[in-house]
Length: 362
Length: 264
Image (cartoon, rainbow over all chains, first blue to last red):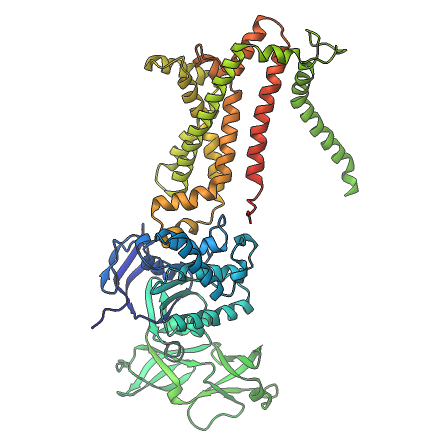
């Protein structure tokens, strides 16, 4: 079997007393677009920096193609990084910036120039080749930074929140530039971000980190539809997390009794929980339905409407249940316009049994 | 805003006074260096270049100028190197005794010059290297390195902290990152600190006077001339020294303040 391109084996990184990364295990295959996502301070950037050799693991091993990389210094790895600040050299022009990595690899001047210009052309900024970095726009700098990293023809490209300084329109444009580039080059992209929309829009696989641990690894759809735990369910957002105690349980389903009522949920892959344990399940806001009359079958919670939030054609309704907990439901604006919620004293939030996702106790 | 007008005029006047007090003596020194009268009095005599001619023909002055030039250029080189090394150490590494390190590095300018001069003289005498050009260079380097450190440190503090890591990430070893990224980034500050330390060394009197022995620098020879008699050639030398120092300081300022324009 071929060794994976990247493997983290129980990697720990401590800074004095602070544990930034705690026993992290994962692999990245060649050609994947992997996003490492999490709130600030979760260890995602430290993980990336260990991959680039800019931080040394305190424990465990970082492997590339089966080779332990712990003692390989940063400048001997082909792991170019696109920095959050871009870190372009301000005293060099665009072309000289792109040539830097080639120069360090001893490529002759003429060849260097040719390859740099080729990449600037590919990034559609050839006309700015001799321009000072300071005179370029945010999007142009981004492209120079990408060219500078890719010109050395690496097998893996690391990106540390490269789009965080751009305005919303440009972010969308650069996202498609990046996905197209990754597909054309067929190399591995490891993309660190705190933005769910960036991660889900681009990545094949998402690693969600929380306080130095990996909370879940999976495809965007897995993470969205089947959050592994409460942290992921909350971080991904727009989820209703309902807590209760385990009542009746079979091998396939479980009844969870809480202050909102008693609900039956599919266990999915989970082990059968013990009666009396705390358990949670998730109802995604876009899978929940609302009605003004109480549904005859299935799970439903009586609520009152608090507020609405319009984002384009999608509306999010914020509801309050009788016990005071807040619930959300997302639906198309045209569906909403068919209902007369203003007149209804009670709104019922309901879902089909197989659309609730059990997440256990944590 | 119009209420502030009296205050503004007062401040302008104050500023004018400050500059007058600083520059009037120098200005008069320059004027008297072209005055034919032996004594600096008003009304002025006729315009003359004879004091400059006297200076030009004085081998002692030439000797002093050569010494001063050697000292100030060597001092500037050593002080800038030391300053860069200490500033980079401060930028790159964090260690427990850093406040102590910084305190020691920045200490020399706070010591009264006369104390420092005496201490240097005693120390050099003990080592058997007093009275040489080298002794002035060493003493001046100690005095001026903190200025170089402060200027270069300021520049490093403006640098994106990822810049050096970015160089490593692209395949630069520690040395080549230092050479290709840190030094080019700091270049304006390096040039500027070279000029400033050269200017300080060129003007410095107390330490030079104590440790120079027979190798007189320009400020030392000026004192020798004025203690002998009142001689307007001092004004001529003074004007020249002022010109050199101001040129260096202005270069330093211009280099530090203008952003590098890319040559096309």
